[in-house]
Length: 266
Image 1 (spheres, rainbow, N blue to C red):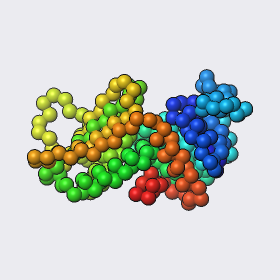
Image 2: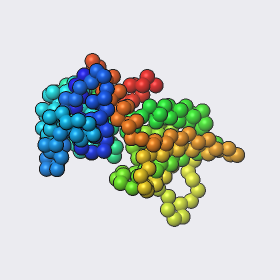
Image 3: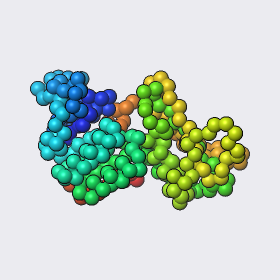
């Protein structure tokens, strides 16, 4: 299976290059970076920390989609929306792990998925998606009358969006378990005299510092007891391996918008 990587010179991009090169049954279709990037022309193998491949980073995204069976994208919201449109034009499978996507971005990606198979997830790890499954079940079992839900997350100081996409994924799972719309019950910030906590709200707290890869804790706090469901990532490689698994799963799939829960059978 020929896999292409957009944004191949970033931290995740390099991990994805390495993952593709190390996976039997997969071949690297190519890698791209934006126009003006200092990495254009550099060898893809060297970027992956491997031996030279005599294949260079280019800015020709259209050519990459034409050459690949699937493309993996951990870039930026506007770029991911554009890549989804390109996938729709070419029928190429696409895996999107970009965070910070707005509702409008997600709607545009869903529209493109009518013509191409797309997996979109704010987190590609097996553990996080299993956690989301458990959160949904716990939220359904423990009603809002007795149990409050708070979601804590911490990431490295370079992360630009908050709360994290994974925290939102977990919040969506909790809201689904309770049969409510997250947008209507989400409490993103507290400051000053806020009054008592509103029953049924799902609260979020975001911390940033150091080189934390990603910590997430879903707290269900009730009278006399507290349940904490947690996931702590220590290596970004889990996201690369999950994304590649998603790309392989898409082979032969019909157009549609899929989630990692589909990929993992959860």
